[in-house]
Image (cartoon, rainbow, N blue to C red; front, side):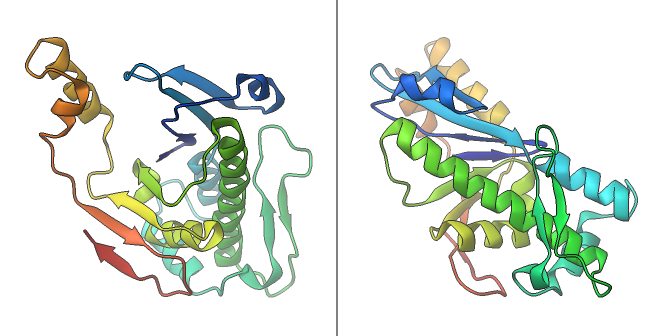
Length: 215
């Protein structure tokens, strides 16, 4: 599961975790699951915070996100050679490469989306190693999931379907489910979860324009 916002938090429910690896990877965490015998290893990194910086730098802080998306959508995959190293917090090499006189701000934004998707792929590989699993699809929640172009880029980069909740903000709903369980309304968190029916959209790995399938 990926919670996508100012930070992206990638987590999995796993029956095993190699805690000896956690200290080897910056941003790695591990929590106990609500279900005994399961663990929630995770990775986290700055994500939409990078995109917010790009927007303020090249547009304005109040420019609608759809304006940026439309300009990036007009740029082909690969951003015509423009690439971005997106670790603005820790890397001295962060920034864009491959810039030419023909580069537009749409190239810069698309390169940021693609660079962040590269980071996601690297962190997913790390999490698979820590949690001893192989991802077949990725559940996506949070404000970043509203960006259909970014969702499609993620699916293409990971090579697996991206499963997006129609209700992007799930934190309060999850807390309510545990509250139902806590006050004895339901016998388990799983039973409480079963009372809520979610709708999903799938972004499949492919060329653009994106194919979205509702389920």
